Amino acid sequence: VWFKLFEHTKIVAIVSSLLKEGSYKNEEPIYLYNISARTPNKGFGGQQIHIDGGIPGLRVPLFINVMWYFDDVHEMNGPTLVVPGSHKKKSFCPDNYVPRNTKKLYLKKGDVVIFHGSLWHGGTNSMSDDSRWALILGYTRWFIKPSFDYANCRKIW
Image (cartoon, rainbow, N blue to C red):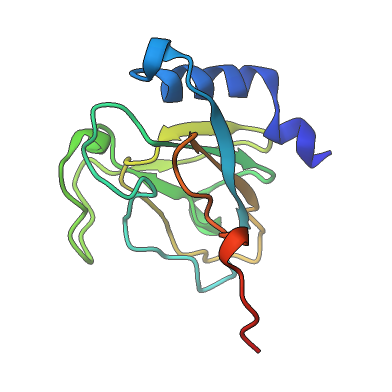
């Protein structure tokens, strides 16, 4: 079932067009580099506004995030915050700062949000027992190291 989401034809077409822009002949490969899921528990979930792209303000994205929502998102269960246009900023969001133009995403079960990895975003606190599960898929250009380095794993226990 999960692979259907990872390889969803419409989503991959959008992500590919965004990540291939500016590459040689706009045809360089992309891949899924990160998979995670998140639901904030009651009383938790707040995040510093951050980027996932590593380097703010790049003309073309290195990373594209896709968030699949498995529950309705409302004020009480911790909506995601986004700062429109912030992917163009050449800086990180200052600590403990929430810009005035920040928007809360109120979504329905089954909605998908696609955004530039350098977009300022974060989660808000959940004040409810309602779950707010989201699957977060990170896609990137071929030359970016995966989030988990299988080649350099070592036993740590």
